Amino acid sequence: MAEPAIPALPPGSTIGILGGGQLGRMLALAAARLGLECHIYAPEADSCAFDVVRHATLAEYDDEPALERFARACDVITYEFENVPAATANFLARRKPVRPDPQVLALTQDRLVEKDFIAALSIATAPYAAVDSGGNIAEAVAKIGLPAVLKTRRLGYDGKGQRMIGRDDDPAEAFRSLGSVPCILEGFVPFEREISVVAARSSQGEVVAFDVTENEHRHHILKISRAPARISDVMAEEAQHMAETIASAFGYVGVLAVEMFALANGAGRRVLVNEIAPRVHNSGHWTIDGASVSQFEQHIRAVAGWPLGHPVRHGRVEMTNLIGAEVNDYPRWLTEPGTSVHLYGKGEPRPGRKMGHVTRVFGEG
Ligand code: AMP
Image (cartoon, rainbow, N blue to C red; front, side, top):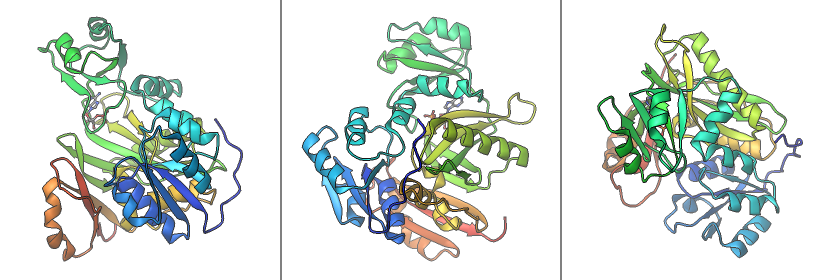
């Protein structure tokens, strides 16, 4: 999957982005600061990334004439969400460079394929077993034990498509409740913290990781990220090394995030990989205001063939998501010392919808 070093695109070039959510919006804003243009392609008319670019395509992912025109208008193409259909990415890759390589999408869209890939790199994960659509769940439970977490292999996010199975629960019922689709059963990890590493890899193969971030979820949705994570230096190095190994093994070009579980000392392997997001990530939003180079700028630099930055963190940083109606608190945040406010320009603040975030930087740390 390694790609030959790419000539750097000059300022004024156009980066195509598949997906029109807040990640695309923040990528386009970072590109603008570097004198690069973005062209957003998304099927939803109310895509908030459309608002910050001059060039946009509103079309379905299987609209080949629209994809053809989009490819012609762009110098390189990337994505802001990982469930872009493989056929779309491949159609575009036959016309223009697509970074990261579409094969990475195929690997990360299926939790079982992804776990096998990670395990083949000798990187630790929760113990896992496949559950096929025929429902061999009893076999998987016999292998993994309970409690365990049953997840659909495809299309899961923010806790959707997964069920915790306790010792007294009926595994077959849990499988049916997820629609009897192919699943993966994972042993429940008694983690101390959830952490993530956001790392960038350039087309020349250089990998630069941000400081490890500690993540707190509410109702399965990321609520707060803190950098640096409260873990030992040895653990932080181990976590960064895992992300760097994964990025290099993919021959990745761009930013990816690796979500991990940090175990308390004495609980066996110290860091386990949970999942890979082949894109910029919510747990890296703190880098916009909290570091000299943001995750969005790193991604734009990498896909444009530019050298990566070497980010310096400005202090101890805390990012809080504004979810649903919490966005209505923005006037309070606007006057909070040391706080940067980001509103995504989405319309209705529906429950669970990520509407914005705030970042606070606290002196040294
Ligand atoms: P995921 O969709 O894989 O990111 O999982 C969503 C959340 O469920 C994670 O952030 C964890 O809080 C929890 N979770 C997922 N897998 C496990 C596991 N094997 N053991 C314990 N908690 C888990």
